[in-house]
Length: 97
Image (tube, rainbow, N blue to C red; front, side, top):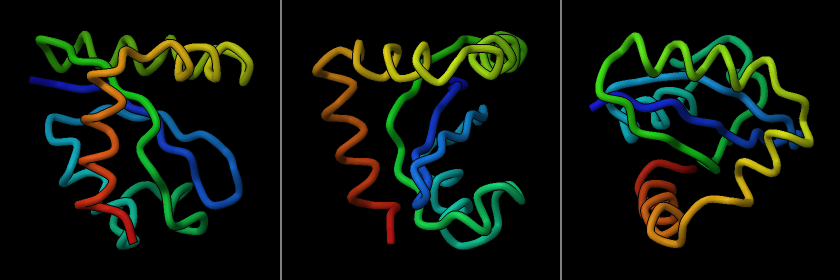
């Protein structure tokens, strides 16, 4: 399984990426081993994710989300199903500082 995800950084900005392991990637971001962008904006919290069957699908979705406005991204986050919100809370409880 592959994922496209968004993080909310300490400064309120949103970071979008893709991974095949959400918990491992979120830990990397929060321990300064992730993207350069998030390194200076820790801690980061997972606020959104989508599942994809392939790496290529996840990467295409990452690109499309990065082209969205902040308002569009916030609408995407607000529209998450309750089940995914619970998953996000659980992942954040394991991976956030």
